[in-house]
Amino acid sequence: MNDLHPTDATQKQLIQLQSTYQTLLACAGEGIYGLDKDGKTTFINEAGMKILGLRNEDVVDIPLHEFHHHSHADGSHYPRHECPIYKAIQDGEIHHVDSEVFWHTDGTAIPVEYTSTPIWQNGILNGAVVVFRDISQRKELERQRQQAFDEIKSLKEQIELERDYLRDEINVSSDFGEIIGNSRALVRTLAQVEAVATTPANVLIHGESGVGKEMIARAIHRISPRKEKPLVKVNCASIPKELFESEFFGHVRGAYTGAHKDRIGRISLANGGTLFLDEVGEIPMALQSKLLRFLQEKEFERVGDDRTIRADVRIIAATNRDLQEEIKLGCFREDLYYRLSVFPIEVPPLRQRKDDIAMLAANLLTKSCREMGREMLGLSKQQLLTLESHNWPGNIRELKNVIERAVILSKGNKLRLDLALQNAAGLSEKKASAGKLPELLNETALRQLERESMLKALLLSDGKISGPNGAAALIGIKPSTFTYRMKALNIQNNGMDKG
Image (cartoon, rainbow, N blue to C red):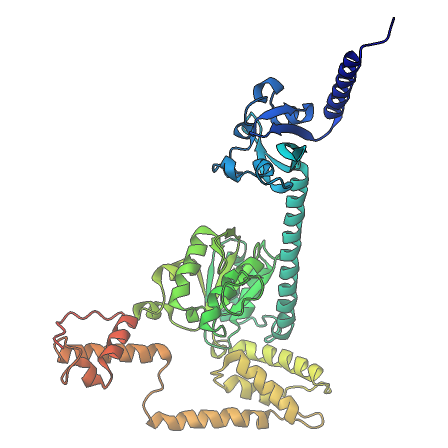
């Protein structure tokens, strides 16, 4: 008789069901394990053991949390009572998480996505089942996608800045045309340009206003190994003091009021190329130290950012100031000066380039006629002699203005240079009449004069600053103002302030 006893049949069905469930668990690609009502492990499938590097006998009947969920990704402790896996047993709710890690037995942190689902039996919360999967590949793809997005964003921003910068350059790059002339003074300067251009040395170009310092900087860049990279110009005299740091180094969104988006600075824009600092003497003292740090270490941080950025930039600076005198007055850092002036170049004024005036004037005349849509005009020998006899205090810029003015005033085919030079002559007469007045002082001389006056006042007052007979009263300013100017002009009070 082959009929099985009902109890035996039930047992056989249970064994078959268990075998079926075990097969399903073994075939599942996700890790799966069960917990009883006390949080102890009841089983773990093969995928779960493979992901975590565990064996079934190692974890059954113990809290699995201690093996694989004991720490956060940064290594900090993960208290069991805060674990969403066990909260499913406590509150009977399904908990889904995709921002944590499970730990492999070899100490590797594995990014995972998991769901802890409560098990109810006859209305009683009796445990939970946890289904989890390794999402390392997905996280890596997300990281790569975010990195690509950040790079695209950075490139887009750089392209926009380059577009704006190049648009500005179109307007200014031809102010003086190419460097024209063969005078001895100019040839000597161009020999220096050729000598330094192929080196990585920083260059300090000095010369009067209007001599073409920017053209020299462009010539250095154009024949340097960096010629395929950008030459980025910063006019230090035109940047508001509060925006200097952002202009140089860039900023991140929210760094200050008005910083609505990230911005890369001129240094990043010039990476691999050349940064031309025009009127470098105008850089505030507070920023000079940060610029010096970049020159020393080739790295910087954007405003509002703590991430260090490296950049390979060659510096060409230009000024019409006597920076060594500025150093004495405490207005320019000596260490920054020596970093910038590795190779100094002096650009001669136009009055020292008399032999170049004819070539320059002819070139500027051709250009002006073309730009203004006029028939080509010529210069007579007498007009050339007139130009060569002029002192040109405004240098090439003044010559360019005179030529343009002459073209505007001309009718027919005769260049009215005489009319154009009347303004220049009138200015010269005013300067001559001003000879009866005290000598016109530049800013550096004014600061030196102020410094000498304050030192004399301190001497007469025996070092006393405030009070009726103090140095401040002798000068006619407040004691607090006097003290502030002492600090700005680097004046040491060797006397005793009794006031």
